[in-house]
Length: 252
Length: 273
Image 1 (cartoon, rainbow over the protein chains, first blue to last red):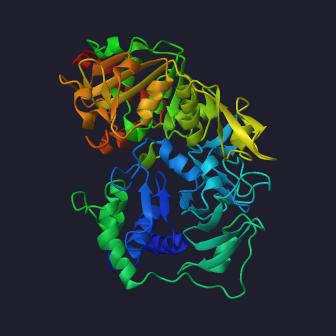
Image 2: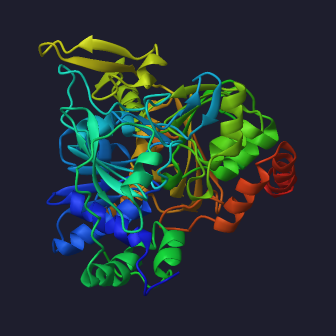
Image 3: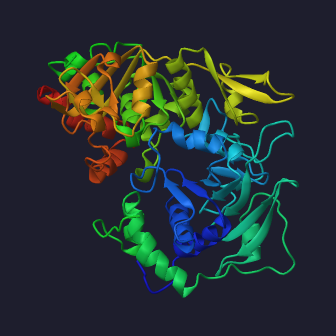
């Protein structure tokens, strides 16, 4: 753990908080500690807005009607931002949470599609998050489409991807062109390295911006206000990244 | 009714039945699952509402599952579910891949006694390709608006763990309302609980608001720490060291067998409270 130096998790949480922007309700699914940190950071910046619902939390949620309430809420357009990942993500924004190779006899089997085959369609801003940025994860075409990046014009689709955040860079997604555009490269990484490790074609600006490092104030908020709120759902992450320990949590 | 023992409570869960189980956060009946494995249960068709972790993996490893319908099986922070992953790769179980809201909607259909429920999303997903039981129709109230219909899921038995019951068999589920939905949808419901109190839950309006009426509940059994090693929200956390040990041991057939011997089969004498 390093509290002085900038951690990659802190940079990514800051990038994602920026992507969240102004929203009324951000929901975070299972096994997503960095997006959870970003959502809580956005709430601190917005003085209590947006509402944040962390799946698996008893404190960071207002749902009282069981697991279906999240999906019913999303179906009505009451969730503005959600996060999805994929064992594979391709250049058209298709995500694969099922497996590689043949569906009946997969080479690798992933856990499953979770809520992606629904939430990707109905949540306006879906932020794709995949730490591992390699040709294994970012592929030309996914082996199985858990949820497609875009849909035919007659398919009800108010939602979809707006960006893809990895350990190397930030891509934004152009729905009309069905294509990613490299938006910034994180400090310590290069455009050439991104190209070398990405299995799909994407657009690039001529002048490649670097992802700005979080401000001192952002780091302070992440480490002192956000970290204790993560302990409930992500004890291991909160301890490893921020040195936060159970019992130190403040009411959210 | 309050069963005299865990094994008696589990009697309605027969070989080959369609068994609905709860997601990790909301009350997984792990003590009951171990008892079913000790009994040698076979050919289960498990429906996880909407995901599962250790429970499904243990049942698969023990050879108790023929078919599983779920949106995901994983050990979360502790990595992929080893038995599930191996069984799908080997083709030794039938996997019906779903998405979380589809399972919620299909249970809601059964709750309402209607044959199907429509759901947005899904069109263009390969899930739909592999689910011939899901159908696309054109919205009869719209124009050129395709929408997916999901058949109702009416399980033979719903099985879950809850914090509290009373002597007549009312069960307190609190805000984990999908447990009530499971019970409403299923033909029979079996519940294990941390505690059984003498006072009727419906005598206290605060508790009544989070209660499931005994009308829907066939058997209740006392099973203190019955979700262990998983968490029971608001009561106890997951046993992280144990789950890490499981994740490690279940990597190999021999390791899984040793786990089963030590933590499931050897516990036979301890089943009755």
